[in-house]
Image (cartoon, rainbow, N blue to C red; front, side, top):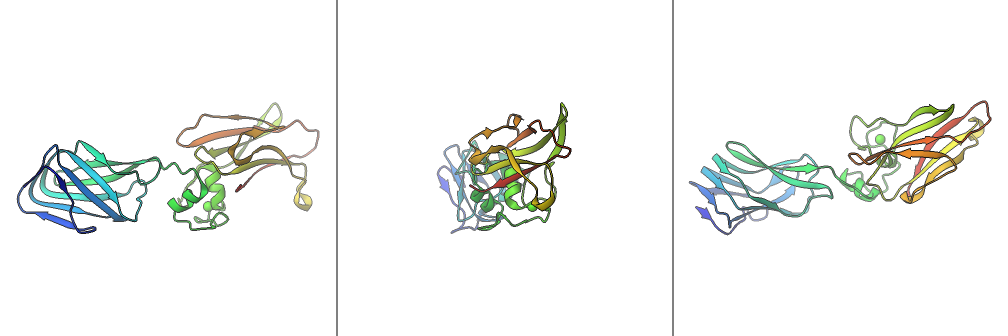
Length: 251
Ligand SMILES: [Ca+2]
């Protein structure tokens, strides 16, 4: 068959089998519906699939994550390619890419998710409501801290965490922060003792990502892959001991 208009396999998600060749003209559009992880419409062609025109992705109650793959077409052999992929992005920062094999076409979710709020981050990572104090991957960092530092809350490995440096004899606290986050408070605090809970004082804060306020000084890198590296230099003090920490909270 030759498709010059829209082809939508399945009623809801399902498989459409074409006996013989399937030729999609430049005016054709293949609509592929996705309704779960690995679950999508499939166009199965018994002979050759000769592709051109559009591929349109329709999300039905499911927003795939980065890296997920869907087999959307199988054929004895595949020739040509879609000229464009339409359909809304599953999450901010993510898009679609078609991958062509000799006998199949897959749809891959590409990009880096840009999750601007903790609620979106929790939804993307299936953390559930009110999850910010939980520790989904049991690495000692609560989910809200993972969000603040730009980490994955579910991965087995996480980016380098906080580290301590020195400049002109003064301590520095170095940590990554999430360049996409718009709803997080950062407080760098210093103490001269840890007894009785410590005499912690805020030396630099960034409330609701509105900008850093001293008295401590800081440098920030440009954003790279959604991460900004922050280096905070302690205020000059005349004490025999000194401790620094990063505290984060939800506005
Ligand atoms: Ca964690």
